[in-house]
Length: 442
Image (cartoon, rainbow, N blue to C red; front, side, top):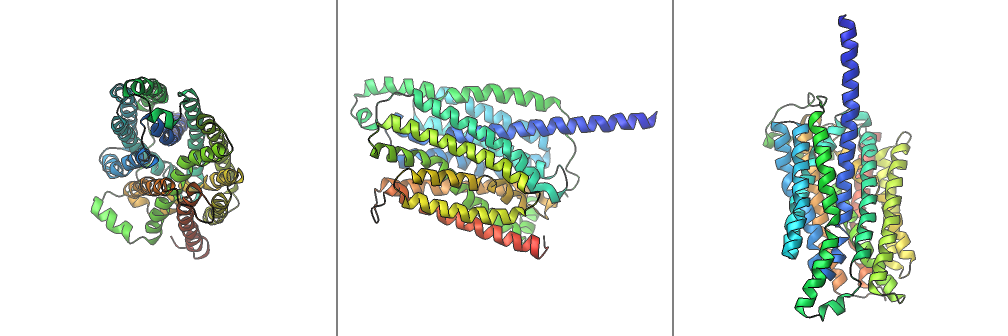
């Protein structure tokens, strides 16, 4: 009888494990959607509010600042309570921030949208700080990189869905270009702005509904206990230990630079394409919509590449794949800088293919050998997302400068910055390969 009870208990544990894994996978898709539906809004906000590209770049700054500010509080929260409660709290913040896009629309102020965006990304920071290390702890450390890449593949699907939604939003915005809007009387401009903002907030209303459903499902499911590997220690003790861990330190730097590349490529591929198509004679809105279509192609390639890379990790070292794809990505960015025709866009699509496995791979490689401090270590890696707030404004300044060298437009030249960042990722991939695959050190 006891044997049957144990077998039934084991089966129930396995079912819970599968349910939890599926729900966490949905969370990955949810924040992928938020990332990709928000970053293309830089171009939309600059038109709707009659502001410069540099000022509109406050959107990715705010978005990634929320990640930075909330990562340590999230780690302390899950250290005090649990991964499950941290995920639930993150979903609540995510839903509240998304809902606040509605009063922001009523206020009609750009900075109100930034406030809503910040609250939303505080929730995303909670989710990432909880979900990424939890997935790494759901099995053996040996397969952690491949496991995290597999779950992050569904994050990429959420990213594709977000870009498609962003394209629909851009398509339905009023077609008047920035110059015409700038010359409009304030009353007429406000009517137009209110119309466009009503379209702009629609994705975030959908987010609220879906997030609340996922929240309820997570609340009623029992989470397997995966925290037995972690010893209880103070934040300062954990930080001191992590600072002496060379692999982790370098991983944080690489993640900081990688996120800078990702946000730069996802944010400014639309500007890159819009400038290119307008030079071909297209109207601004038509050029922007076509650029978004190229962005969708890039995101689909990104998603497919992540699945393929996860599969290839059965035979190839993840760290070696990281360094090789970084070098190919650098070559593609050089092409995006040099070409002044559609070949440059094709190069940016290739960059997305190369980027696909980088975030989860760097994350899991950096956590190797430090399961005792996984929560605080995970928070440090999420704080590295600040790179997405640091680099894009610099790139926006270069774009706004209208600088031209050897006949190359400023939009092209601005991609020198992501090129340098990707060089850091290639360096880390090589270092990790030597450290783990050749030397065999943790």
